[in-house]
Length: 307
Image (cartoon, rainbow, N blue to C red; front, side, top):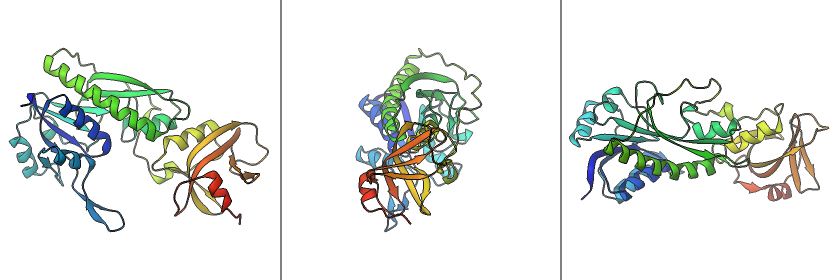
């Protein structure tokens, strides 16, 4: 039988599954899971369970799926599990009535080195901004989003060509281990919580919208390359070729003053495709034509006919 504080885990996507799995493997006493309601998806618009729900059911854990977090029936159901501690990983913003009632509070895992990159898309924005490192933070929830006292942090290097998808997978595992370390520390009462410093004004991580994905070719090739990998594989950096939307999935930098105007699409020897930028060229490795699947640039060029 699992020992220790009674834990209610809250999360939805695959990123959160690694943390829940790590808690179970460490024999933590997870008594219930809270996740998003099933949503229609795919061509048939069939109801799909979240990644966290699928994992929870496979491990015989009770699952709550509230439509509204302030609903009295949800709070009553949550209280029936008598949690000592709540853990939030990639979930919704919680009302104070929810995050404040467990005796040990509510713990969050965030994909940045707080106070930098508070917000919904910390992994993406760290790469878009050209950071050479980021990290994971465990902290205690407070009123304002991502502002609670820091418990533990672990730094993660970002290589020159790392994508948001690759960083996500690394951070998912690092965060899961850090979470277990944090829970153990809370139980043993050997953690000193640290108030967050004032965040940098240029290091924030708001939700990404379509407008954020559009490429401005008047920028440097370094800036645009960072944007491509910071939005890869999803939602993807976009531009237009022959009036059609093209998603740039993987690129390389060529530092060389271009002869062409920024944004010019260039094909060389039917093998190389690139765009002129402010101070160089952005070479394309993989792209996704509107309505098509992702493909290597060689395959794209074999079927390409300029208008």
